Image 1 (cartoon, helix red, strand yellow):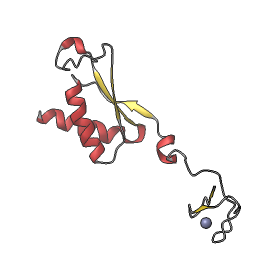
Image 2 (image 1 turned 180 degrees about the horizontal axis):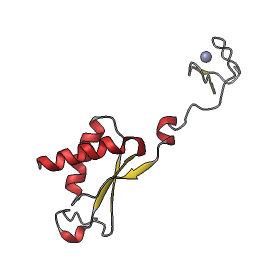
Image 3 (image 1 turned 180 degrees about the vertical axis):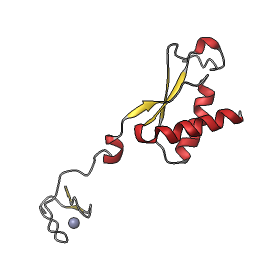
Length: 113
Ligand SMILES: [Zn+2]
């Protein structure tokens, strides 16, 4: 199986060159989104709990900003609510180039809670 890197069309094994683009076929199109792979993720200021983090994360994702949540210290595998002081700080990691916008969003949301 081969794929054209240009038009992404899939060809049979015996085809080695895309007749449309005259491109040599490659074995697989499976590759990381180059834009995403290049991004470096940096932590935002800590949030008092996972509940807040989930809220901010959902807003960021709605804006098309990839992000993930990581809790410092104590893990909350027991489902301990982040409002407890022992739950530790929860941080959202966002792409470095979006950090400023993300902090603005987070700050805005915290102001309205
Ligand atoms: Zn092609």
